[in-house]
Image 1 (cartoon, rainbow, N blue to C red):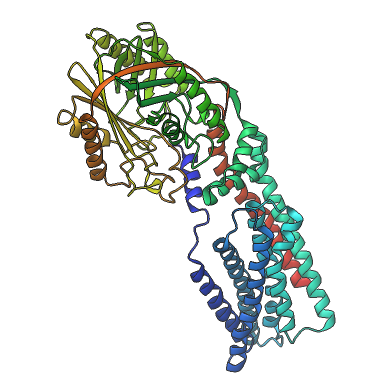
Image 2: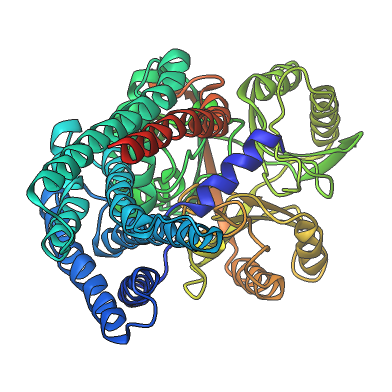
Length: 620
């Protein structure tokens, strides 16, 4: 896995990781009391009554401002999707700590200078009070910029309204500070207010500069608003609202026709029993965005239209072939229905055979003049097989048979996490293994088929640990005494080595041959805050539980075998809107680049603003 991807995952998993609201409220209250008391202690050492007043004053400065800010933020952004109560409290906690920290630090510096002057016998005093006043101004202006930054990147309220909403907390605290500060006189008050307004404008401009610098990277590379894209990602991850990010994806993507195959298994009475839908579409990018829900959508189509189990094994497709929006799935389902209406029955079926080349294993089962090829590299690691590579395999096999359907078993995820493209050394191994397996299958006598199928949803395990809503489905095809189990697990890949454990459990105790596949559903991605943001099957779910469930489901399917007819349609979809080659990689790589840009620009702009602040606060 590249450094950029690792950095992206690290950034992603840390977003909005906040304590409980009551804990944050406690932090705000305690910080206000402690800092209020300490600042007064530095001003009037030994005056217990003044120190108690300082603690109370800390509460007066912070709590009304925090309450009003929470109300204004909530009302001003309530239709924007992200800033729920928990996160609003988080914003206020961060700005409170920042304001109080600068106030306390400046007061401490003034106190130390006073002590040094006293030690040197220099007849100057009041430095503590000077820093005390100016430190609060600096803290208020700086905390404004933090609130403004969060509001702009999480909502669509706009710069002017965002500034007005964001200024409530520091301005209210500032007003409370003035009303409770006996040192102020009218001339000083005007100066202090003027400086505060000037500093606020400077820090608001810093935020605008920062967002422009970060967004420009995405605008230049993809011609989309980078901040809007980031906001859309947050809305999907935090609230499950995909509209905004899909709007960005639509600006990036392109339309293309993609491979589509439908295999239908029916009973002797021509009643549908099982449908496999293999499409050259990647079920991503994450959560409910784009085509992430494709396996579930196919399953639901089967239940609603045919009353049967419908499965979506993973075709040869990378993230380049994510659909840009959920509404594209309905177009695909129309193609699936049309393909189903055009299926043609095959006259015979072969047993399942395997062949290998290098580290690649290819399984083949012939259905009439169509070869079904399943490819795995387990126990070596491998991620997605790209569509051009799948076509290379298909073209090679179709020199031997009329049609070929290629399935990526997607069952051996390791640390590599790199897809297989045309320049990979694995491509020729895949072609050779698939051709060998097809030649072996062509030598076998064929016969009629029987089918048994069973499913288990695994409700005790959900998306947070990697299990999609369709759970486990086992389809056992019997030909000439060989029972071949296609076990499809609704998950995003599989922990390395689990496939071998499952095959050892099933063969020969339950069936004579088996293959384990995952759907690569990305409904499980951007759910968990651990590791990669998703869990491959067998990483967070106990492998013993998976092995037990797979064995039970496969045995149940094997016990339900009955004569079946098989019909197939191999074709392609209408032009569908996909993300396009390199788009996901570009976005993934731009995230850490933009984060580094944000650090550089942020340090430069806010550092300059901080220097200007100190200059103004010292000279005026």
